[in-house]
Length: 178
Image 1: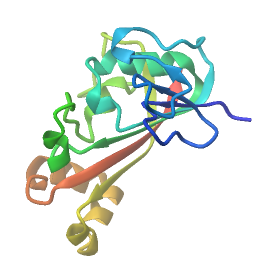
Image 2 (image 1 turned 90 degrees about the vertical axis):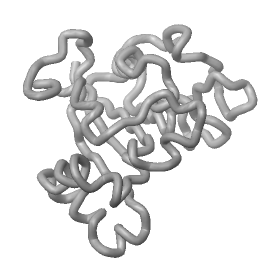
Image 3 (image 1 turned 120 degrees about the horizontal axis):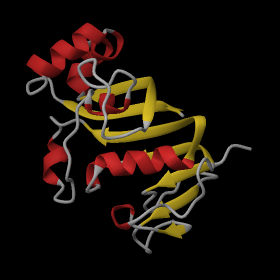
Image 4 (image 1 turned 120 degrees about the vertical axis):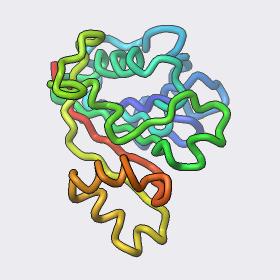
């Protein structure tokens, strides 16, 4: 049976997962504040890690990703959900510290950002899936399909159109490379 870790589980922990949160008034099995230390698990403990609406709240994205990478098994997955930087919710929640784009995690890919390896971290991920949700009007007009099925259009949208055709939520599934 796959071991699943739900980091930042809040009140609705993923079914069958071990829940971690910094708030004791949640469904967490383990109380842990990621910005103040390591997760209390051995290296390579989990097949799947879920971080739904967590990464935009952390103080240090690189340290958090390294910690998720540490506790994930090689070939395991990390599932992240976060607001797109153009979503109003990205800015209206005062606990959000980061406003992320579709390219924010390229830092952890082989080849890194702009075709250069990143030397500040050894954590490596391979993108298995990335899905962007847009507002309903843009979804009905076909923009969401284009953004999700044509990389060239995604880049064009994010660089030139995204403050008009705003993104809502991004969902990433990464394979852990060790």
